[in-house]
Amino acid sequence: MAERVLIVDDEEDLRYVYVRQLRGDGYLIDTAADGEEAIEKIRANDYAVIVTDMRMPRKDGLAVIAAAREHLPEAEVIVLTGHGSLENALQAFKAGNIFEYLLKPLDDIAVLNTVVARAIERRNLR
Amino acid sequence: MSAIGTLAAGVAHELNNPLTAVVGFAQVIAEKLRSSRPANWSDAEYERVQQGLENLVQGAHRARDIVASLLRFARASKPEARAWVNVNEVLRDAFVFTEHLFLRHGIVLEKSLAPESPPVWANAPRLQHVFTNLLINAQQATPSGGAVRVATERSEDPKGVWVHVEDTGHGIPPEELEKIFRAVLHPQGARHRLRAVNC
Image (cartoon, rainbow over all chains, first blue to last red; front, side):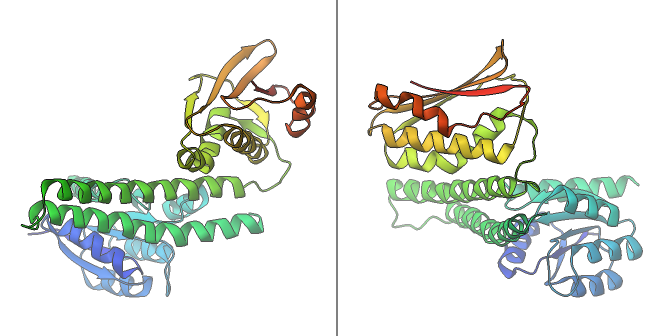
């Protein structure tokens, strides 16, 4: 059965790019335009990987990470943010189970495929 | 974080999001063209568009690097704070801000940074300011077709790092020579001294 991935970003263009990039790898992909929508979906579905932005309206990435830790402790979370700093990274790692902390823009969007694949691999090893 | 640091962080976020879209869409378009190239496009036209898309991606990466440099510059919580600073890294930040000037004026910027140089006790943003000014001065003094060379070398006596900025420009008149050091930072009490030499 295909692994389920949740993409969380308030920018529609970026959700389009990430979905287009990942769909070729055979995942079932859901999207959320803000933290609150993401948390609703986390409560309702079993995601293997959650890719989330940090700064979003209606609940930020930290809330998404905390919700994932509470409802989907087996899910791997990948942070993909345009506002990277040591403080933000520490906050994210303290909030939950972060697999990777990536900064926008990626050198190559294909990095996303590699990181998601590795996250699923780690999840499946448990 | 200072007010300007907070502002810079906000700007970084606001810029990095559209830059991600630029990179992502450029790669999507390039991939689409590779899989279904328009029949009426010549080879030259196709290559030119692919190169253009690659340039788009490189431009977005360059903008990202400029944003990151700006963020580092703005993050100094105390304007006079000093720390152990890697001179090569500060120079690289200065290159990010000034390289476009050299390109635009047809001047070659040669970099020869010593791979292992000791950290210096300095204020990084002020140092970057000095290097940026030196590079801009060198560019303005150098005609098109000329070159500016930046090199660092380890110094054992005095202990520290030499930074050389040389250009093929018209040179500094002898009567102006002693004035150039008034513009260069000599932090008092610094354990490692930094000197800039113009030739």
